[in-house]
Image 1 (tube, helix red, strand yellow):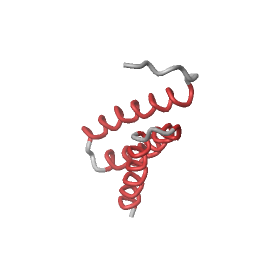
Image 2 (image 1 turned 120 degrees about the horizontal axis):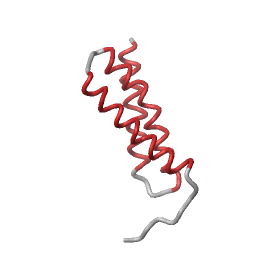
Image 3 (image 1 turned 135 degrees about the vertical axis):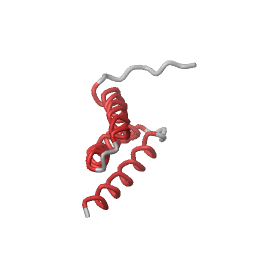
Length: 83
């Protein structure tokens, strides 16, 4: 049963995170929070199934989602450079 819960958790928060980050509106910053919310289920699933390569990848994803959350939620707003 815990496997089903983790799969639904990962599917929901993962899909919402990617969809939100791809948006242009100001609420795209919530995508990084959703991405972080998916990570505990990723860690639980990969560790219990001894998928250590994916566990390391989950560490990288956690860092990346945290970096986005930090940039959107902690760092004061600054102008976006134009190409």
